[in-house]
Image 1 (spheres, chains in turn brown, orange):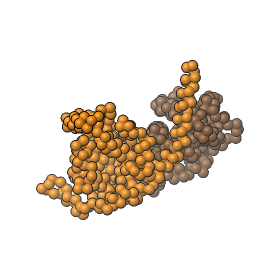
Image 2 (cartoon, rainbow over the protein chains, first blue to last red; image 1 turned 90 degrees about the vertical axis):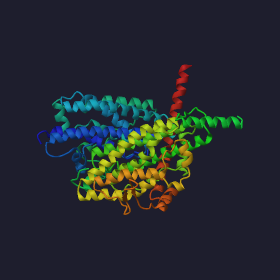
Image 3 (cartoon, rainbow over the protein chains, first blue to last red; image 1 turned 45 degrees about the vertical axis):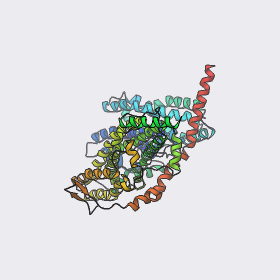
Image 4 (tube, rainbow over the protein chains, first blue to last red; image 1 turned 135 degrees about the vertical axis):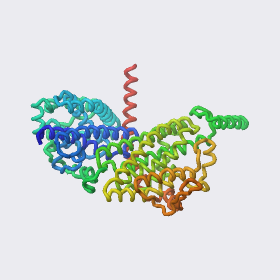
Length: 251
Length: 318
């Protein structure tokens, strides 16, 4: 492939939205209220919409006959390069919202930079996605506050969720090979530079929500190299089921 | 109020409906009108909410990104329908919590069709095509029903339902244009959903208890049997067009009636499902009750937070 770095770079962005969208899709019809159900489904929809734009672009760059669905559903588990954070399960609503929030803060900062990319397609996708992701962040931040500063029970559950997911935050700022190459060409975002703004924002919301900022300095990584937690395999089994069971068909 | 005064109000009320005027929430209405509307609208709202489950069942396994997005949007629309139908009920002085309570305790009913399982992807096509198709036939006349909030909600619901119906049919088209295995999936789904879809239009007129009063209030404009016939006449050519066979050996065009004759519906099965013994009744309720109970701490937190926020605001004002 001529443009392998760009291809891999796009996957690095899009896989996060794919896996998070899939996780949210699991919840449709099972939310704590009709309003949250609608909102989570909506966020999932936004993310899949973004995924389609990215993968369609990636398919074009690959230049063979692969389609957005081949990219989404026919890779092996080691070929997905999403961060570990987004594949974490919907343990409870606190986890779902904490995962969303910890990703949204990053996602918005990332897209604001991607908008400046020399690559016009990526810049356009970022531009369109920013509006959606600003809403996601507002929604998830509001829930961090409601649950953090709600009842004793909700406070404890939200604290547990933040503590549980904190270990996956640092990976957001690691660079894969393709990232480094794309940054040097003015196409990619230097994620290392987003770290400070990220923790500032996250910490401010946690403080406002009366939550403790976790002190742990031990972080997990591997997603960007395709080494995932055990959760991902099951998610992929569902995601890929139809394409594997009924190969080479149109739907 | 004297008996005579009430009688007067009732006469005026019936006259308004006869003139096709809309009844609005603050208008005087007979208690029976209010109760009947709460029952029907909430049953409709519950059907939307429970109906999210059989389709939600395939979101994570949709075969393509395009289908996944469409399915998510569809199930989200259903949640939206539930939301405005519950709101319409609230205009008659009943809270959403009370209505949920009725659903969860089994006191309120929802459309029995959702007590059947969605076992293959083709069911997403069949449900859209047949179940939404039957729902539209039931619901279009309600856009002109007498109760204003219900009529207005139904205008929007019907627009979206008809989009869903086309989307479901399009899934079936794609399957029947596909491989033999895909065609088999489509035929199998039609075989399983056909009869329950016919049952969805309600018991035969002879056994339907609410029809007469509902007709008068324009909650119903055609009888169940008429609606069923309309559904069959409309759907059979659609099946033929894509090479599917309706699973009814007695189905035959009747030249004289300009309609299809069709076979006997298994009403024992219908009543079994209505009474709570369909394949998925218990699972559907378990999912609804489970979501509600597991969500309690979340709703409590939201209330507590809103109250704290309010108190802080008041303190600041002082």
